[in-house]
Amino acid sequence: MINGGDGLFALVAFLPIIFYLVLTVFSIYFVIKVIKFMNEKIKLDKEKNEKLDELIKVNQSKKD
Image (cartoon, rainbow, N blue to C red; front, side, top):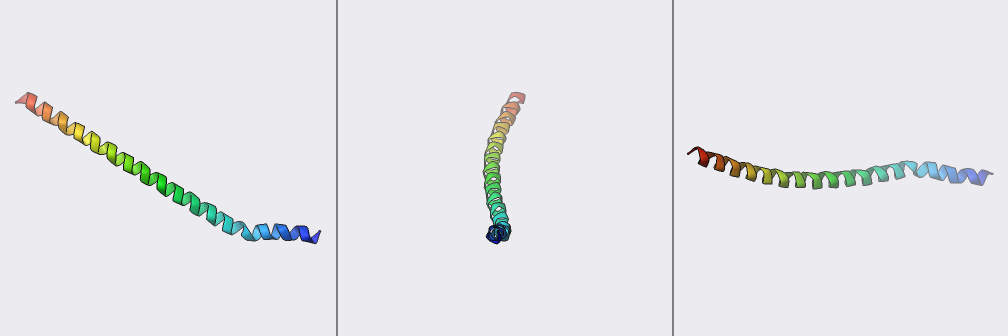
């Protein structure tokens, strides 16, 4: 009966290490996802700005 408690004690002793490991892995995953999202957003914003520039040029040429 006493040996069964040793396993539980070992699990409780490693619980903070497991928690920090999971938290670190989740943080790294989150940062990678945010970086990928921001890179895609920057690319789409550049494309939108180029299209707006073209529209402005066309609109100005029609006025002249």
